[in-house]
Amino acid sequence: MERLKYVWVGELLQRLGLKKKPPIVCREVVELVTKYLEDALPADDRTRFETHLTACPHCTRYLEQFRQTIRATGQLREEDLAPEAKENLLAAFRTWKAS
Amino acid sequence: MYDAPRMPEVLEPLPASDEAAVLAALRAGDEAAFTRLVEMYHTSMVRLATAYVPSYAVAEEVAQEAWLGVLNGLDRFEGRSSLKTWIFRILTNIAKTRGAREQRSQPFSSVFDDVGEDEATVDPDRFAKEGHWLLAPSGWGDSPEDKLESAECQALIQATIETLPPNQREVIRLRDVMGWTSEEVCNTLELSETNQRVLLHRARARVRKALEMYFDGAGAG
Image (cartoon, each protein chain N blue to C red):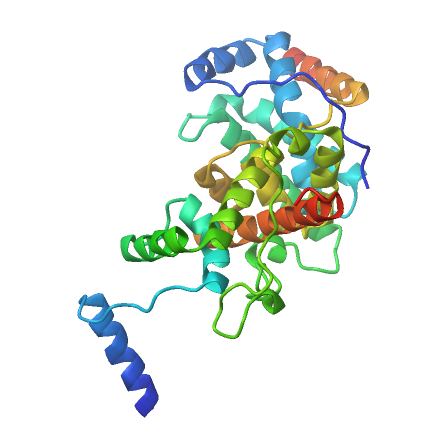
């Protein structure tokens, strides 16, 4: 209970900007990449994230590889439509049209 | 496992301005307009349905049934969502009902509701106790883009996506393969933004890891 109170007070101070959050570490950065790329990080976390990157070539590389992964995934193509499926659907369309 | 991917022509999504024209054409019974829609969406609809039902054959039936729902609902479509989102919502509704009827071992509602345990996407052993890298990612060479677009890499990415849990698989497919927005995916799959992002992040991390192993093996570092 006592500990909970300290956590709560700490969080309150952070929100009021009276206590700085600790810098984030690599292990946290790798979990925040999608949130960062989606622009969903709160401003202060975004700053901490970017500050970390300027000092960490490994996380910078991780982020770059994530971006490359996304781009490469975007190159995938869906399969062709099977001719039977298309014929079935067109038959259904004609029935619908005639009804 | 499904058939290996082939390379069809790229079908661009409909611009919003075209949507009214497509709707009018469909309502007037224009077969070409219907064919175009089917060519754009049917394969992805079947794929998405596989996340809810036990087999590809049933997924195909679900998608066919969804098209009937689309045709029969055309007069009621009010354009409050995009035509695409509306079509896919019809699909997921039918797929859910059908999935429940087919009695999968897993309750159908949990396919997308349950994002699973909060697990690390990078092996914790790669970090020191304080959280900095011990085994940092190695480089992928000067310009890995060509390699990433090679048939070999593309097949690897495809195969990796296939091995993902269905919810991660469909989220990465819709977001990164099909290029949907997070809003479209959340609406279609009835996912919160947070859960959508968690699933997407895990899926992307798995694909990155597969590529990392590929590049490490190829000695490209």
